Length: 464
Image (cartoon, rainbow, N blue to C red):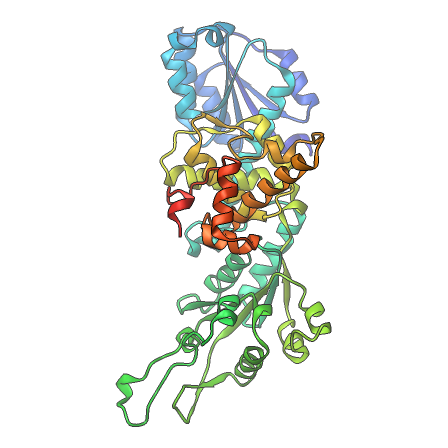
């Protein structure tokens, strides 16, 4: 990264610190120094995306007044406040500094500064600043989804965003392929909400639920020649008229359902139950799959003609383990949304927590990350979230297990945690995923003293 990419404003009223500036420049920071509030504000207005480093040699006094005035000037800047040692030794006697940190600062350090910790904190603050700029840039394209967007700056996500932008302007059938929890549904909605069909319905059908029903969802509607037209019932497919029909998990359809949908999509029409006339359909089709349907075609589980028809345009959504550069960005994005909705006073993630999050494989992908953060925000009493708050320390650390019983206990807890998050903390669904009875799952949860809280604040036992 070039020196011009990372900018830091060093505000120090007492005197300049050439050694510190040289050290920051050595680590690829472009440093701007100011000793007066007016000059610092001018630098902020001129250079924009800055990280702020405000330096206090002494607590209280006129220097604090100036720092406070500057920090309150632009709340979009990520400020790091450097304080003298006595603040750490007796912080309760410095209420103004406390309030300033809690309300406006990204982090604080006490003298003497730990260079590596300061570098890490500056880098994290810079990353969050870039997220803010990136989010404001994308708002015009993704604004129709109330702030939902494809967060990430990895090469895979940049490619995916460009593909979504291009396909939003077209009307082709799109197949979205990716592991569970990667965000296939969000991509389908973005394709619709940023297309010419945005003002028309977006209708999603869960193909797995459809295949498991003994009957079927009311897909085709109902009409009777004897009854008046006003009593005609419109089915789920026809309700998407003019908009988009999203078939989620299309590989789960039965052979008969595959045939019915293939004919409907090819002919662009349907016949209501009891009716004789075909109803023309003006619908865009988007489908998704967690598996490679080519394997299912080879195994005879999916129609080859339907498969080749659907795969005209294919979008591949990368798993989170292949997006290392995006984990911290996503974590911050979800933290801000969730903390705001829960009115939480938690400030963010500890440095250790961020490191562990980046090392963890996230088998449940973005969905697991979001659910982890939500449960931590609901349950934690800490000011900064730790790996334990996200239940990551135990799963991420490498340790020696001496007995088969320990190995099994570790595996059992990992499986229960993943299944509960995947099922949104619903005991019945989680038991089905684990292929055990609800009674067995309750017993295992009690055995390992596991506790879960849903996004609505209900315990897992309440979510039947």
